[in-house]
Image (cartoon, rainbow, N blue to C red; front, side, top):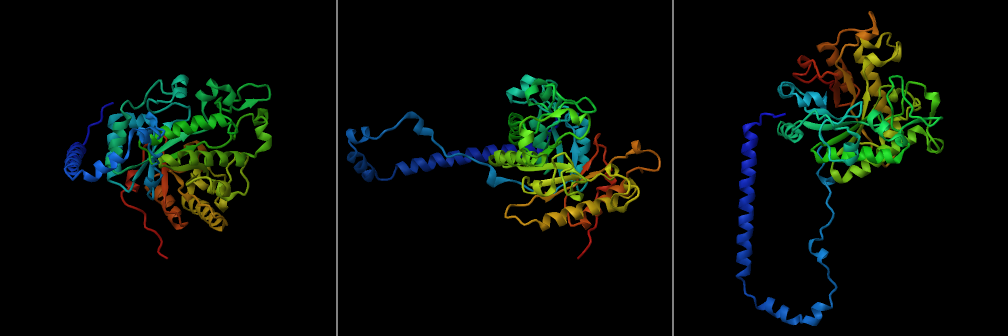
Length: 417
């Protein structure tokens, strides 16, 4: 697709090129001035080195361009995020991209969580990773000029977060069955929707996922967010055989180990690592048989994102009869418990920042009496519940990217101490 570039961006690039040319010219002039200095000392040094002395020095051609290893770790960019989720199709559809860009510029939103690899395993842009190409995950490119889209996000000071659906990957699991969760009979296991999953214990699958994250970092993302970073929760789980690794390591250890590995591998790329977790994780003490344990993940990531959608909580949770009807207490209780548990941890390791996902959709599938239409009041109640719990960041989820912009024109007032 072709985005309309902002004229100021072109002017900035022209100024950069002119400045670069000026710098090069200045450097050449400086070199010429240096060569005009007396050469007596230089000649004396050269005369001291005879041919035999030079020959005694072991040298090879590769020594000429030896440079120290580079890392973008010191240049990490972080901010307190108020963000929205964006699909690859939305980014690739010009009028939708421009519409949401305009709304963002008139709101408190300062970040976009952009699909890089979605729930099915398809990529948003053309990848340079051979495995991705071989599997056909970028066969249908959603955004043809992705770099242009990223340039526009950067120009408008939108903090870009790469969403990578992790272990739920139909394409990669089918293309590499030895990476997939398998049954006791050695077949690829499938969940209730017949989706295949990568085995979180499989280290080869880890490298495939981390390669995608590294490529996202080189495309200009400041943060990599791993979604579905867990074991499956539905389907015939009694048929699953995780292999020998499943007997030697718990689910919680496996998920934390993957995230720690990813964070270490991504350090030179100067990006932060975040992970989406179930909204109940801060309220339970175990890992709910999905591998997400709050304290374990707190030291394995930079940011934790509880999916605290009120519609997803069981009736009576936190004493709330119908959670979808009372978004404020659901967000407040979820995040307050997360804050308290993390603050109580005794560790020398850095602790993850909390940044919940909030609900900006109507859960009509719950049935009459168990849901309400979500609009301005419901969105702002969730934001207030987040702030009142002591958490400063949040993300909004709407699968179709249709957001309640009237709720986002100005920030929600915070309680004063």
